[in-house]
Length: 463
Ligand code: SAM
Image 1: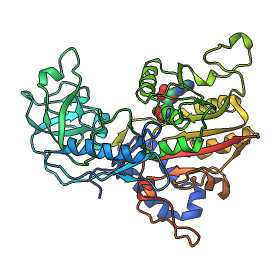
Image 2: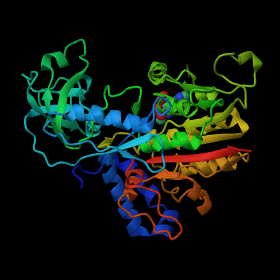
Image 3: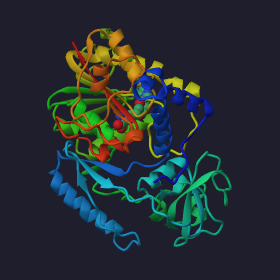
Image 4: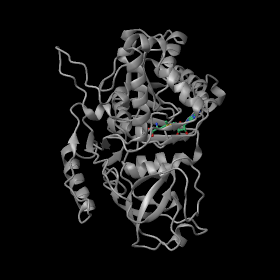
């Protein structure tokens, strides 16, 4: 059931995306009506959260079933006494040994119960995925709001609400009811308040809050992001590079898969994000992670004078495996009510991704594995980059992925059917479409595999 309007995009971006999803190759495959309906479904899916919350568990620290039991206990406590209290269902994935899936309850038909609190779009999206409202996310609050007041929380769709407002009449969506934990004056004090500003008691989509829950054992991560780590498949003792690593979700997964043996070099160009990578690695007791602030397009050099014994740049052929989880237009993120990117901004990513791919290919050892991933849905950042990489670097071959729980690549970039088949594209617009019937094997994909954020994974071998 849909409760929010389709994602709002600037007209030029909407048109661009429409051309992607109605491209000639795709039309020839599925026909115009089906292609149009998929595009409309995509716009609707993007404004709604996925139907499952996925957490990756630290199986390098404790067995899956033990973590599952402890998580159930924690969450039961969290919900105990809340009007929404229900028993927590925690599912295993049939193919991925280190994820737990929690069905999201919703949308629930609720009525706003109190005076309005307006939060920023990012905060609103977090609420729809189970978070409480943290004070920095609050933009508008009633004049005399005090702890204990029942409030209705709205998300500012277009980013128009001014911080400190008392009332906001602009475009907003209701995300649930909660109870204030702060005075209005504290929230908007000169020294910005931290901590929970509104505790959500009746969210439109109910999912547990993972804030402070078993921090070293569970990590909130979208399912396709967990798949990426397995597809790269690092082994203990290897040297692995994560080129665009912050905040370090995938870095930590890779280090865990390696049983903390070997080395994971994590690079990111934003200095302020380095501490987050280090904190995440420390919380998960992963000492084999070494994080550096560096522009990965310049992470390779053959000049001995530039080589640093510790960190980047590195000589060519330094790594057994390379992950390029590329900076991208992020148009697959869910839930997202509105994206303000201009077309120029959307188009700024492919050139950067190619520079990063160039460095990735140089840094990889012959025989090594390169995984390229994005959380966006455009062709230019996904299948077209694969076609470009295969054409530009004859040493690369596209190889099958394990596990393969997403769909094939999107036609439109001139890739062959075989090539599209080994790609992994997570297409939430297809989540209501039954998987094709196969006489050979039952479909392995579950609803949780299909109703995810929009995501793309390609795996290459360097010959
Ligand atoms: N892999 C991360 C994870 O799973 O937690 C998410 C990475 S996010 C998609 C892309 C990251 O690339 C951002 O943190 C951004 O700062 C970083 N980035 C952008 N350009 C970069 C560059 N030239 N070199 C290194 N990092 C870059």
